[in-house]
Length: 298
Image 1 (cartoon, one colour):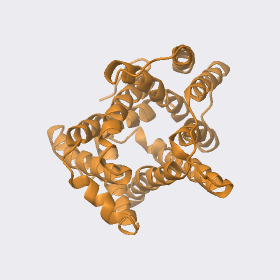
Image 2: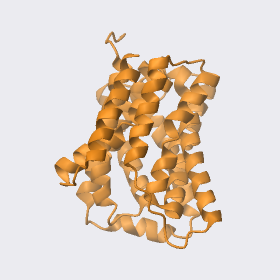
Image 3: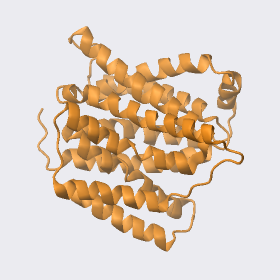
Image 4: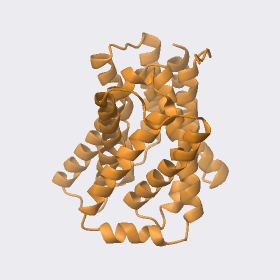
C-alpha cells in the first residue's frame, strides 16, 4: 500500500540517528567486556534471528519471485556494508584510536552523496549543501583526537585508509540497492543484508589470529543486558528505519541526517551517563540541527 507522508524519508533518517545514538550508549557499556568484532557478530546474529518471527507476523515472504541477480545485489550490499565495512572500521579503530577514526568516519555522508550523484543522478540544492557542511562542521568541532602512543606515520596512513575504505564500502553497499528499494519490502531487504553480512563476517573472523579471544568474549554474562538492548535498538529497529530513510528519500539527503546520531549521542550521554555538556558541544548541537533543518526541508 502506498505511503503518503510528507518528508517520510527524512523523518526515518533522523529517527535512525536517534535509535543508533541510544544503541551507542548501550554498546559503549557492553564494549567494556565484549570484543568489538564479537559484538558485531552477536548483534547481527540476534537481529537476524529476530527478523524471522517479525516477517512471519507481517506475512512477509522469505523467498521473493525476483531474478537471482537482484538477490545477488542485496547479498553483495550486505557483505560490503555489514561485513567488510564494519571490519575495516574496527581495523582503523585499532590502529589510530577512536578520535581520528570518528573524523575519518565522517566520510560516510560525502561518500554516499558522491556515489548518489555519479550513479543515481541525485542532486542537492544550495540550501541542502550548506546544511551538509554545517552538520559536518559541527561534528568535527566536537571530536577529540587522541592517537595511540608510538604511532608511526605508516600506521597512521594505513589506519586512515582503512577508515576511508569502510565509509566507501558502506556507501557502495547502499547505492547498489537504492534503485530497487522502492519496490522492495523493508523487512526482507534488512534480513537478506543481515544474512549476507553475518555469514561473511563469520568467515572473516575464522581467519583472524585473535578469533578465540573474540568468541570467548561473547561467553561472559557481564554486560549481556547492554549488548542485547543495544542490538534491539541499534540493529533490529535502527537498521529497518535506516533503510526506510534510504528508500523514501534520496540517499544523498538521508546520509547527512543519519550522521546527526553523533549529536544525539552527546545529548543521551548527558542524560543517561551524566557526562558533562560543554559550551562547544551546545554550539555544535545548535549548528548541527540547523544544518539538519536545511537538509530536511531544502
